[in-house]
Amino acid sequence: MKPIETLKNELSEIADLKGAVNVLYWDMETYMPKGGTAARAKQVAMLEAIVHERFIGEDVSNPLGELVNLDSGEIINGLDEETSRLVNEIWRDYHRAVALPKEFVEELSHTSSMAHPNWVEAREKNDFNLFAPHLEKLIALKHREIGYLDTQDTPYDTLLDEFEPGFTTANINVLFGELKTALVPMIKKIQESGVNTKQEILHQYYDADKQWEFSEMILKDIGYDFHCGRQDKAVHPFTIEFHPTDVRVTTRINEHNLLDCLTGSIHEGGHALYEQGLDQKWYGTPFCQAISYGIHESQSRLWENLVGLSKPFWEYYFPKLQTAFPENLSAVALEDFYRAVNTIKPGFIRVDADEMTYNLHIMLRFEIEQLIINEGADVASLPELWNDKMEEYLGIRPETDTLGVLQDVHWSHGSFGYFPTYALGNLYNIIMFNKAKEKLPDLDNQIRSGNFLELRNWLKSNIHQLGRRQTAKEMIKSISGEDVTAKPFINYLKKKYSKIYSI
Image 1 (cartoon, helix red, strand yellow):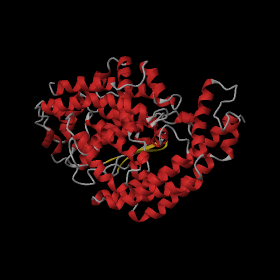
Image 2 (cartoon, one colour):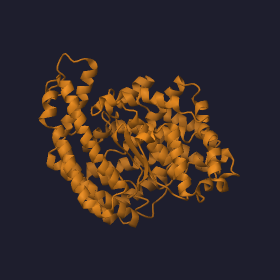
Image 3 (cartoon, one colour):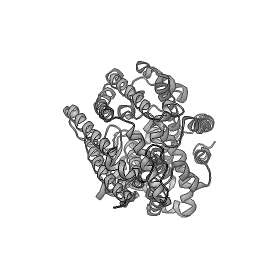
Image 4 (cartoon, helix red, strand yellow):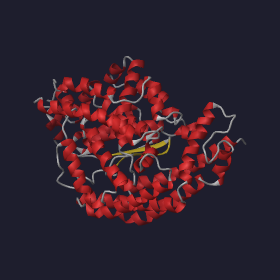
């Protein structure tokens, strides 16, 4: 058997093991009883260590070593372009993994598994001190991880590279600078416009079961395959995959905020469409994996915002929503509802934030993470630091830890370097959507009639099925002919919100 075939077979089996680990993670965040935390942490840590050991073992290194220099990453001559790309991506993962000792991988997994339920409890009780000791351990472990890996421009860049390969803090600072320069005056104009978007429409009592039914109807309409997935509830919505034929989403319900469940489901549905759209014949290899977290986020934010907050979308769904909730919405005009769901108003919670202020949430987290990783900011200082940054960026100050430093799940997983990818997803998705509209000139009318098939197929063909054949930067360049920039996103916001707010 050729080395590449041997390698693909081994990677497929390793992916099966990873799928089993993910089942345990999914259960831990959905149905697992609290008493199972310690045992589950041990189970997950052991399996993560086995997966790691298998990936850096001889059954991978031997065939990979026949295709690439394991030390330098130099591809051995004679491979075609596609195989060279595949081998390069496998080597990249291998090179990172082989630098991490098995014991470290096991300890990091165990620590994060124990940290997550403590984060949930701390959030429920509004007490950062319950989570702080676990966060200190995770930060110490991430510093050890940086020490094992090839340090890039800054320690934080080493972590960022795991989530958005090819990007550095310097790159992101340029993009965020463009965004901040444009967004701050736009938000100020909107706040001074005096336009009332009647947000109270969304904050009446909305029955939880009816919200759930409506969210699942939309998921089915946009193409999420319930034969290969399901939706459940979680404290912090997430998507998790075991295989392209089993991709699960979660959401949360607030009976006095209609958008929580709807936007959560659509957002996670966008992630799930990506995973369900991957090319199964490459299962286990980088060609059946998302390009980056930013590209993944582009898909969720595309469906949540560019589609789910658009006028054509609600021209189709608002009459259905009125039927589901006649006591709340029968007397509400479509235009008033459209304005309500597109309200621009600084708020405490990132996942509830509008299209403009959302990016400011990411910027403050980006700055705080750099202070933690690069400058050793003290964990005890984080609640106050968080509140100061939120006041600086959004003009509001959280009165509780739950509304501030405890609102996001990411640190309980040790996911430092993840947050910037959310804002990058916003920059990527409008570039993709503009190209889709160019190729599908009738797209608005299709959305207006509840037909999402052509958009879904375009995304699947041009993004999902490519796997990691391109980097995020390469993909955006191939789609738009230009490097990544904030300008298309800024132009989109100006055009949309100047109409809504008459500015």
